[in-house]
Image (cartoon, rainbow, N blue to C red; front, side, top):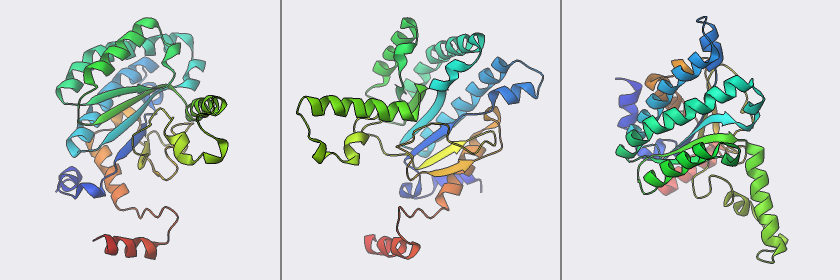
Length: 256
């Protein structure tokens, strides 16, 4: 029996509610084939399509894909320009498919840096899928974990200044509620492709207790089997949240 079939038959409570993916290795994948970096980025779109489809089929609640880091502006201008064009093209081509499959699309990050045309397309895509009740698909674009925490703190600082909340009342939940992913569960499983073992300023606050899964595969080679293998690995982990293994097992027995 395939890992995907096994996962489909599992109790949904065992599955990660929120999976975040750092899609890395497009350029190196292309270089290994004697092609330009954009060849790899375009090939990576197929991997996105497969991952989104599989997540939706498995009943994953939230999938967040790191599409464009705030640090990516440092790349050659030609590559950044081509990436923006690819974003527009893919968004226009895929949004009907997402809507048909009841997927809700959110773009998280500072999109004010994008062209007005792209901002308008993002707004239209989000509006079209706003009431969909299936998978929540977050595309992190011009996003950074530090930026996300900072913008949340700025909102809080402004509310404190207006007397809406006092410093003494602040809790971690107040920051969580002002992040780009407010009202969504924290990340349970973070996946990074390409063999790099770092999270690169991605969802720092939301990944406090996430399981980190690193694979040598480059993103264009990441398929349905790769995705379900990562989920199977997650299911076999013992998540403690600061408790001992014995305490976790005792709580599970009590909850039953």
